[in-house]
Every structure is written in C-alpha cells, then in structure tokens.
Image (tube, rainbow, N blue to C red):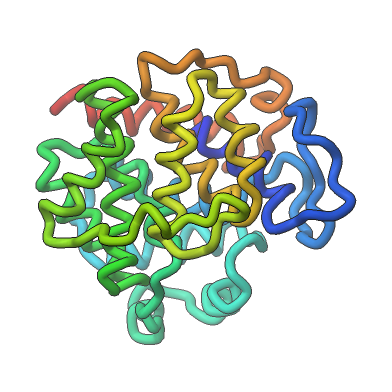
Length: 286
C-alpha cells in the first residue's frame, strides 16, 4: 500500500497544477515539474506524512496529538523536502518539537492535508476506533468539520478494501455512510469536484479519488486517470492508490520502471517496503 502511494504521488506530482510544456502522461518515466524543485521520482508531503502516520501506528505508542505532532516534526527534520504548501513548509522549518508544533499551529484549514495522510489508518479495526484515531490526527492540523470528514473518508476508503467489505461498485456508498454515521453531511458533495480540475479542499480530493476508483480496474489506468483530472492530482492519486492496492478487483500492473525509479535513499523505496510490511501486519492481527 505505502509503496503504491509513494509511486502514485511521485509520478503525479510532476503534473500537479501544471498545464503547460508537460510531456504526455504515458507512465514511461517520472516527469520533472516545471516549477517545483523535487527531482523526478521524489515523493511529496502526501507520502512523507503518510509515513509519519504509519510509523506511529507500527510503534504502538499512545495515539495522542503530542505524539502525532512529534512524529510529523521528526519525519520532516530527518528528510527535509519541499512539496508541502509553502506556509506549512515554513512552519515546519520553524518548529523543533511536537509541543512547539501544537503551540503554534492554526488548525483551521479545510484543505486536504489531513486526508492525504489518513490512508494508513485504514488498517485499524474496529472501524469506530479507526474513526476516533482519524479524527484525532486530523484535529492536529485541520480541526474543521470538512477537514475531519475528508480524513475519515480517505481512511474509510482504504479500510473498505483492506478488509474486503464489498465490491468496488459499492465503495462510494460505504464511504458516504461512514461520513454520515459520524455526524457529517455530504450535501452538495456531488458538485464539490469540478471535473476540469481538482481543487485543494479535502472533500473535493476524496470525491475525486472515489470517482477515479470507480472508473478504472487497472492500477496503471488509475494513475493516468488521476493525472488527467488536472489540479491537485498527486493527492488524489495517493489516496486512490492506497485503496486500489488492496482491491481484489484491480489488476495490479503498476509499471516496473516507476517502481524502480522511485527515490531510494534512506527513507525511499526499500524503507517504504519494509514499513509497508509492518503496517499491514496490524490489519492481519485484528
């Protein structure tokens, strides 16, 4: 799961909000974004923060805002990279501990930050425990109804496929039901995603990921579809990847050149594979 998230994220990031002078979306190689400093094959904040959530889950430390914030700071400081929203990147540079993080963060956003990192929580069972843990992590940075709801939507989507709860065709109903069960509404959600470009709101991202999941059955097609949506495509792709990688209906045909081309420094491909194995063992033990 984590490996697919990283590959989808790294590939799609080359196309994020970029609509000029880009090569074709062929999956033949990683694309250098015309403005971003990341190298082709480097993953972004979507993956790095997902790794933070996964590491904390595997460590089995107490699931508290302070421990979550400590982990966010730790994974950024050990491997600083751009790719975060500019203001949050500067914020991470300015803090050194989770306590500083919590004391200075303004958790009022409805954007996709809490959703983009929520997929690893899909391994948690029972689902009401997953919802509680997802809410806690979302509130650290996105303590708004939309921020929390989008995170729970992303985690519920992964949970649905990890635990084989039904066919792809019913995934959207399951996610919407989960959101409603915890007291959130999706009124107008069908119109939240402009099919010409995916925005940065968390709910838009989750809806776009669900749309992509429903319209494809090969992981390669799914990645190309997410990129073709245009807009905040790396976040859509990362959330969709985490779900599809656990689907029995999806043909897992992610191109080997993208897997091998993913960055492989200290916290790159090999590390992600090892962490992925540890994370998925949490699901098998429930």
